[in-house]
Image 1 (cartoon, helix red, strand yellow):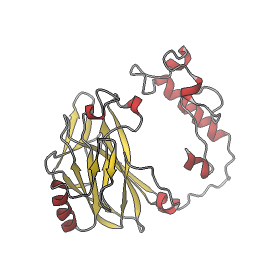
Image 2 (cartoon, one colour):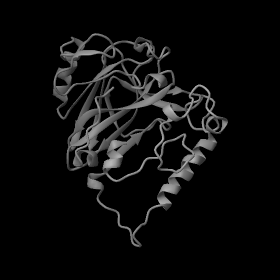
Image 3 (cartoon, rainbow, N blue to C red):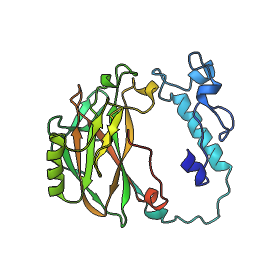
Length: 269
């Protein structure tokens, strides 16, 4: 939200039925245990996702924001500073990513037709990503999360992972050995608490939602894993622990514009 405001944007806070851009703190202004009926109707049966009515409210609030602005009679599309590229196979099972080893596309929810690239829990996975931009760009991954006991990180159905990005496949293979022999420099006191961060270039993802109250839902999370350079990049994902489900990757997001405006994400979770 801070980034949006810094760039002159506005934010609509879902749950608010007042003016679209009004300040609204859902946690402070509503009794979360017993919200009024008009608010309950905005959410689905799981009390987390928006209902059909909730989606209509979001749509109307977005139109309210758009209609409140003046636009030039002949608007021109800018360069978007290199733009961004988002690739999701969550609903299709199709991806341009090349799986080098240790991964497999699977329809893990056959009833709802949800797909993910599942990472081998023993050796990890290497994938190839081709960044066709002209500059180094921030990359984020979307992956599945769920904990049976929200306050207990060890109840996560998915493993925490270490991630490394390089343009040299041999460098990835060498680093794979480091990961399997616990030579990455990572020292943890728990799944969440890190005593010593991993060595340069490695990123540790806890495999959890940052907000504890949503960990019980089977939903995706997004975390930054560093940057990719123009051309071919190799990404290695190594599970630090075994869990009931393998690490499930559902999308990649590469944002050169984010790099151009010096945006940096919070520490990866």
